[in-house]
Amino acid sequence: ATISVGGMTAAYKGAVASAKGTLNYQGQIHHFTMTGVGYGGYGAQKVAATGEVYNLNSLADFAGIYTSKSKGVTLGNGKMQSKASNQNGVVVYLTGERQGLATNSGVRTFKVKLID
Image 1 (cartoon, rainbow, N blue to C red):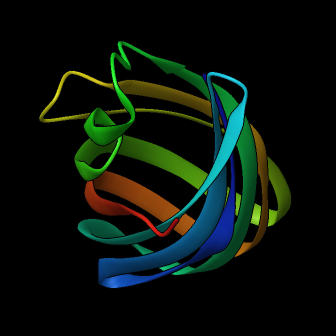
Image 2: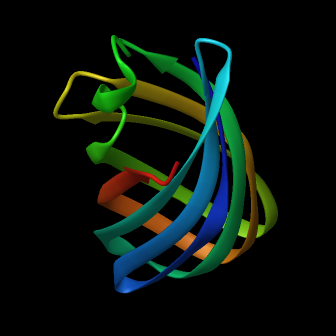
């Protein structure tokens, strides 16, 4: 399966994130939302990323709570890479672009909800 996601993050010690995306699974496109919280970091950034989804045995396994660790600095434009996994064993690897002025370091937790 493949994934495409875009959204915003903001942090001042604590962090919040909001994003929307699409999942291409077994030839079908599914839309989802992501909301997240975490700790560590300062500033705000816009993120656009694509990636691969592994261990997705059924569509129902995609939704849930994902956890990732992050560390980096964005000064204007920058690259990003992320790995996150959920309680069902689904693993998502993302690569993409960040825009903004931000530092991030710490653990992030995201709730992914299918919307169609």
